[in-house]
Image (cartoon, rainbow, N blue to C red; front, side, top):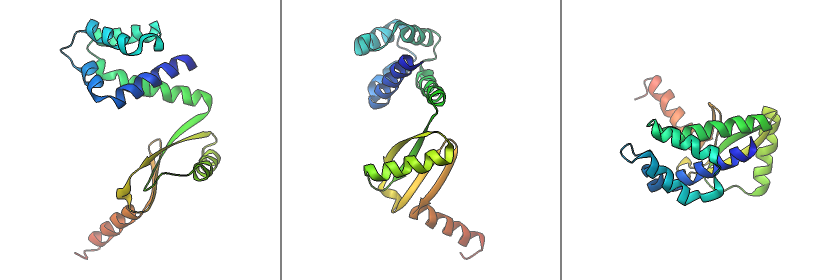
Length: 159
């Protein structure tokens, strides 16, 4: 499972980082063979024949827009098998290594799995952090608190 997971991670990261390549791959009017040839030129031996076969099948069946979803789902299954879980942490500033280790410990203890933090910097949060774990969100940001306060005021008919 690991070599395939690594290949799909490479494919997914490349498509997410290069919008033009992703648009070509997902374009419905570009022939399947042309898309596959392009990807073989980009990735060469970084992707195995089973991955190229899957891509060709998706392209031929006009399902190229499923490539990222399939890769993401496979990554989630591979992580689950390894006893890991990805956790998105949104903060106003980059986290230091000591802060990341503290998050790993807390989230690992809470989930019983090895937490893999993915940090996203968002200055619009004003202060605090937002943690996304699966479909759960813990919003401990100043902007989130202000939004909740606004909703309470509106519900109470303050304005």
